[in-house]
Length: 146
Image: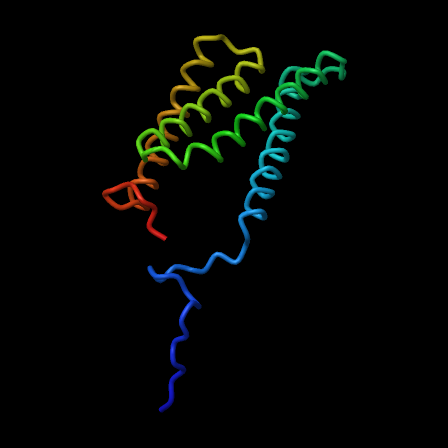
């Protein structure tokens, strides 16, 4: 029975799938993901601040400023955090998730202590999940396994 001979260069060494997109495409996708997610987050903050009431100028301003800040910070985390060791990488994602959720939760009008508690719990869960993922996808030297 005949089998096809493997060709060189069709798959990277490690048996993973090949990366078919260029670095430029990855950069554009990183920006697009940040902008779209930021707009969703800003809308959510504005809706929480409004509490079902009328839309005001301050409400729109809060939403747009939140969207811009969230998008910029998310882009920075997605760009620079992978360069860190896995422990710091997980801590950066946990801090980002905790702060973003804490601000979102505090915009509903809840007490500050409850917002801090909820943010810390989200950050703790995010830390556990991201550390586990980074720990299982890197070798002992900290290089990604592809």
